[in-house]
Length: 31
Image 1 (cartoon, rainbow, N blue to C red):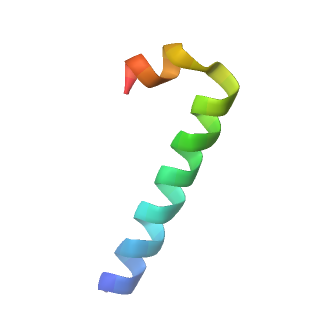
Image 2: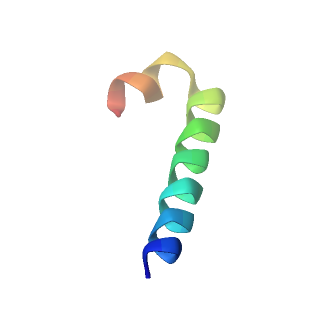
């Protein structure tokens, strides 16, 4: 269960990082 949650969190942070790269400072302010 914990491992599964870690995978989900890691995937989520990776997606947020991609959003930040695509949209730049605006996305960083939004989050």
